[in-house]
Length: 336
Length: 203
Image 1 (cartoon, each protein chain N blue to C red):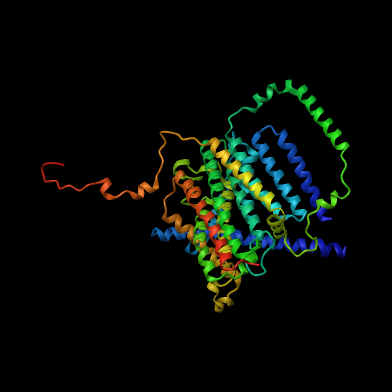
Image 2: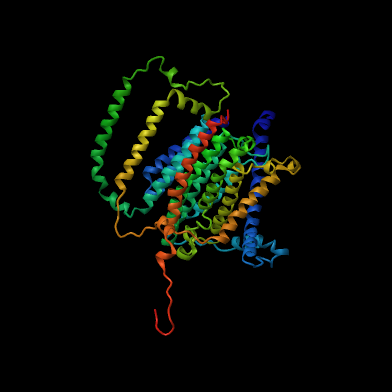
């Protein structure tokens, strides 16, 4: 019995605790990301944003949550009910699943697996199913068009995202996310990776269906796209999933390019601040970029989106894989 | 204990979902069950310690191939119940072909003999206690010992890709295309000219 407790039950409890903590933090972050978004958009449009509920409108996300959860869930009679309900659940679950491998501090990671970055890439490439299933199961033309747009968009940008990740991996020599953060990179390597950071930032906008690539939702032409038929709980799950995905992609960007939990620019003096705070700040910085572009750019046209993905990013990233590997070999800087 | 439990879980879901792929009435459901099957196969790979293969299976098959399956199947506008109506008349013929195939398999594998050293050759030529991670070990094998087959496989894929593009590409007339280079090359002189218009006379 003692043995059973030590080998199975106690570790299971610890893991469950870690998962609970992680999910709790991510959910709070999602709630306050919506608040952050409205405040940032407000500031950029010279408004105040939410101000009524609580001091500075701080309780607004909670009020929104209660509103969404207390509404009636409507399932259209022509919809394919099991798939219709499964779709938002899947999207939300995947957005949380990937957090298992994200290292928020030196030892703070639930699963420190060897192929962490591949796991992240696999989970993020599955996000398209939630949208595609929702679009099909709704049995509505707008929703279906939104689903199709999303599928082709996400598949297109995934290709260049994969090549960007390959560039980073070439400089690091490991698929483990903790190794990716801690492996020191010379300044010239950082500069060489800078164009890839730009491509990555644009690709994650497309991958999370955010403005200016929010064609799957396209309020003005598809009246809400793939989630047009969703209401209450199911809609809330889509909403939470989308924002959790935004945070996840920002965290991925932080891990790959911005040095994770390490203090910025390698300044030792700043190391007294705990690592996870740096991680959160850097992630918030990337999230600000998401909101900034939303307030700045109009929506892309569909053919422009496809051209950018296939004719600009794909050749550029492919070329950059050659450039990075060539430079690394030329300067004998390949990781051992 | 946990490992074997996980194995039976993955394996049974895999077999069940594979069965559902061919029995589901709705083709979209079939594809979704296929995806579930891929997942559980990836789970089995993880149990074997082949985490790289597992992740690649999910990325390539679930993340790309099955998306295209789903894409195509969703857009099909066929009533599958109509297709099934005449299916029963082919059952005797199908059964005969199936029986012949089964018989052939039995005669083939019944007489099959493995060389005694064959099983030794099957296992990967990596020491079990090596420090290498799965991915490194795979990379070292693929880029040294199996370099030629690996590159040939890549070439075959390239040929397949070019073939698919050549077969499906067509030039359509009457389609507006945005030519960004031309748009950028446009100067003010191409589009407008400034004229002095004296008042009362028009342009």
